[in-house]
Length: 45
Image (cartoon, rainbow, N blue to C red):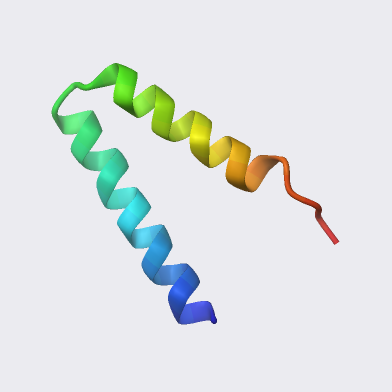
């Protein structure tokens, strides 16, 4: 399971970096907002 989490994290980092290099600020903002909704609002046990 940890390998899957690391792989997904690397893919998300690559996507954010690509949006940043293209200066696609709206896409970058949407991506960061989606990441916040996915990881920031979950139940922490």
